[in-house]
Amino acid sequence: MTSVAETPAAHGDPAHPMFELGFARPVKRRDYLHAGGAHTERLSAGVAEEIPVALIYNETPHAVMMTTPADLEDFAVGFTLSEQIVESLRDIGVLHVVQRDQGTQIFLEIPDAAAEAISVRSRSLVGRTGCGLCGVQQLSDALRPVSPVEIHEPIDFDAIVRAERGLQKAQRWNRETGARHAAAWASRDGTVRVAREDLGRHNAVDKVIGALARAERDPSDGFLLVTSRASYELVQKAAVARIPLLAAISRPTGLAIRMAECAGMTLVGLLRGESANIYAHPEGIAMQ
Image (cartoon, rainbow, N blue to C red):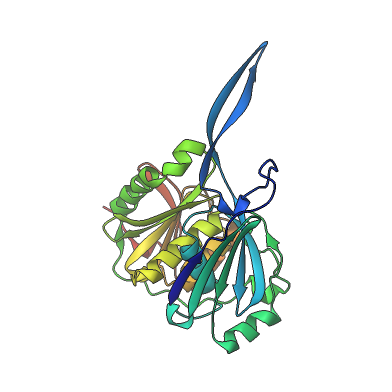
């Protein structure tokens, strides 16, 4: 995969609220008026930014997702893999990121057969932040079958607890803004190796999957943690990446449990401190 970044000069009205939206940083400090009782006070704080990111395959627009403006190459690769647009990183040719006033465009070259396949189930709609089904037109697209995930030796429960602490430490932008999800991939001993933040929980997972692919790490040799609920889309994305265990800070949905059971994936919810609930395939965890 060849990666290219391009930053054309910004133009337009600097006074317009949307000026240079595509050039935004992940966090911007903004002034605000705090009102409490009869008193008001002018303060400032970091605010989480989000921008529209257009994914364009073989010069054909496919989807526009609202995304935190960081790790966009990881996002593009992870989205392309987790949505099963291509099977491996080798199927992605040039990846070209272009920043523009209104947002960012990411151009990807993929095999013609893959481009033809996604044109049939086009998702050329705006994807709201955190939305996992925007643009899906058929039930078969929403509930794609997943191949069974191979569970290696059980992962120690203590390692999962350790990874949750590591994920908390990795959320530097959320500490400043209080408005971001995070996802992380940890090795089997509970060490967080890859962590990504985004306003969208699906985007954060895609960024982790993309980072693993670009670093040529084996996703099956560890597990995934998320700071959100465990929805079925996250189970689906983890299963496509062959990750055998997904742990979430919040509860899972019923459909997520069903899909984890079908995929042979261990599903953990309400992972907080020293406790957690195991909803599917508990044999993937070794209890002390």
